[in-house]
Image (cartoon, rainbow, N blue to C red; front, top):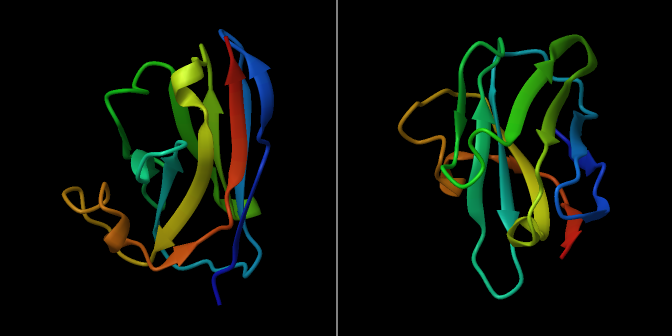
Length: 126
């Protein structure tokens, strides 16, 4: 019922900005948590950010806090990841994920999420 699709990735120079979008084409309206994860070349997938149903509670990995902003447009079934001051270390495939539950402690764990998108490539040049 939940079908996630990421978009907005691309090539950007260091210091630039990108905005990623995650659309739930299944148009699910029940409360849920949405997270962003990323997988860099040669590394395991890691947590980036998460947001609750109402958009009032957010969480960020230390590596992106202050540079990335996660937000939600409930009417459009869309979650955004605004990325600023991008660094080459941010180069990765970015994934969005969703679960119908909420847990402050578990939302950083990929096993917490039930649904995943296909990912979108972000490449930051030096």
